[in-house]
Length: 112
Length: 116
Image 1 (cartoon, rainbow over the protein chains, first blue to last red):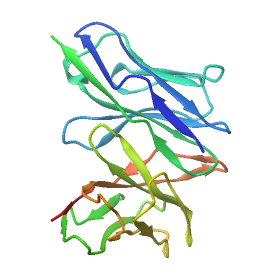
Image 2: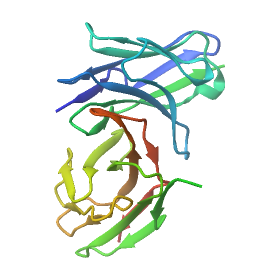
Image 3: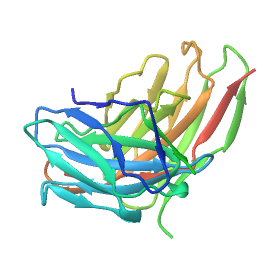
Image 4: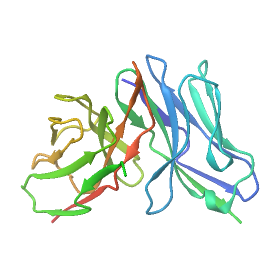
């Protein structure tokens, strides 16, 4: 079965500094990978997705992620954090087995 | 407007009772999923279904049951065998783009179940 590991349960950055949220996956097939964001008391919003096209994927709000098959990673980055980026972020993997699994989440805190 | 509807939004259950959570989608999506969200544990997969009349267990299926009699409906029953049913439950659906690849997920608004 496929799985996702988010390497940090909590990341804290200062406003204006880079953001790195790490995600490693396990899949027996070519996976589709997604990042979602969940603000407090809000629903899940898709940030970006990888579905076997370009390995560098650009998403909304300045986020991007790079699919690295050799490292089985799909880390999420942003050059400069904004206060509004504070939220919970989830990495998700899906493949031909038909299931869709979430990581445990990374809580991003942005300090002024 | 197309979307996923979960009902009810809040649900209270007495211990020992079964309860069914509804999930309906009018997106013509092929696959549907049920997740449970607990603080600090992300979303854990309970059951999923790729086609009508077929479904598979996820990581925490014990104490839950599902059916997929229609493409648009995927109800989840929380049985009395579920030891800790108080949680937030999310239903999702995806469309199959081609063999072995689905779109991103669309989510319902969730049902918060409390056992009293």
